[in-house]
Length: 268
Image 1: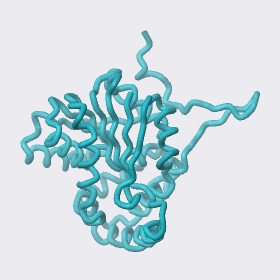
Image 2: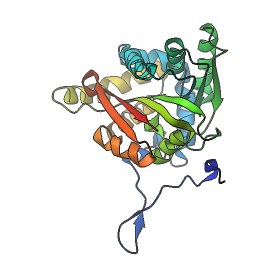
Image 3: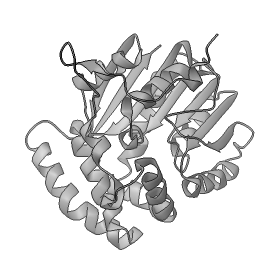
């Protein structure tokens, strides 16, 4: 039997006419950190390694700690399913993994990321929380994971899928390693859609956020990149189509805090 881990990660072509095919590329996939050319995955890794020491402090302050509540909502959605083996995608410094382990008490939880700088901070936090017997970290390319098919009961991701260089491929990989009947729960930053929050968010994100990001992390470009990807990322009903295309049989979403964040959930 063919091992699906070794299938090509290239995008599936869709037909434009009898003789022409094209590959769908989402706008945020074209945006790269620091405005550099080159492999987006490598550039994202470099960016997060650079901002890792100040990431938690800045993240919580910029959201007024509301991000903790968003994570809790995503975890509560999974509580009814009692997952025992979990995967946290783009785990960063491990906040989502730690909260999941505390609230859901799985037997094992693996946090993966491309940034060792972020995960090194996460390892320290996990040890301080006495969860190192449950949570482990490993460096993985989310577009081509080393795990076998149907390995996990549940998969989580917080503020990470927006950075994928190939969103379709990343979601298909999640679908592959998720067990049949397993559940996906994601929180992702999004653009508010209604007046006046849409206008207020635009002003906040293009003035205060990059300025404060530069003062704390000394890396203004990183936070400009993050805002640009939020604005370009598909959201809401469009994401439902993308989840279905990746193979998930059920998908839904809920806008949180006036649409600043969106929670997505799906079932294999």
